[in-house]
Image: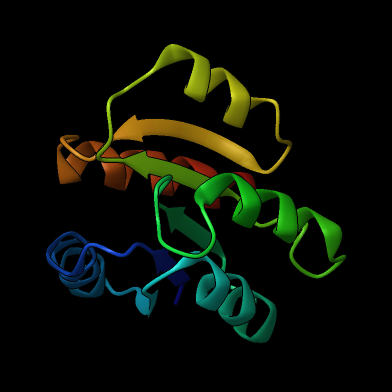
Length: 124
């Protein structure tokens, strides 16, 4: 069983994604902001992380970089999913980070997101 961590301050979005992946057999943990997400990632060492960009206290880029500092979280694949304006420069910034594997909009179909998650888990 795969363990997923969703780091997102949008309750509706993270609940929808959590329910979807739980129905697929995933164990899903949720964090409501970046700081909580980073702490949970270190504690539970998920197989994959879905992370928002804009969050209170600590944003997505700080989470991605914080994960890379620790040996036990450095190689966890992170898929960035943003509800903010989809900016190519923002995408390029995240893609420079070794653990950031995808950058997509929250408007993405869940079936497409499922394929991206599966592709990353297959690589592990």
